[in-house]
Image: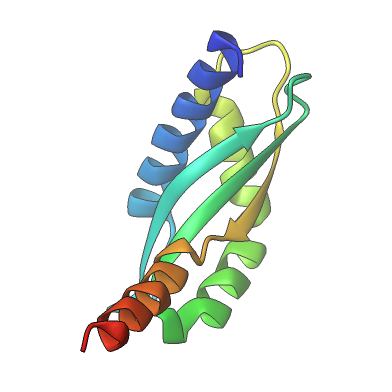
Length: 111
C-alpha cells in the first residue's frame, strides 16, 4: 500500500469517526467504531469497515448506515481536500466476534 493511500485511509477513518459521533443518531447503547478503511488505488472507492456493539444490533446499525449513507458521503466530501472524492461503502467487521469464538475454543481445550 502506498503512503498516499495510507494517508487517505487515515483521513477517511478520522472523519467518518467524527461524523459517527456528531451526526449519526443511533438508539442508546449502540456503538459504531471504524475499524479500518480500504481505499482503491485510483481513489474512486473506499470500503469502511465498522465494528458494532452490541452484536445483537448489527442489523439495526447497518440499516441506519444505509439510510444515512448519502448524508455521510456528502459530509465527508466537504471535509476532504482531494481532487478525487471516493465513493464510500460500509461493511460490517466481525473480526472481534470471530476472535471471541477462537478464544473460547482455546479456553475449552485447556483442560
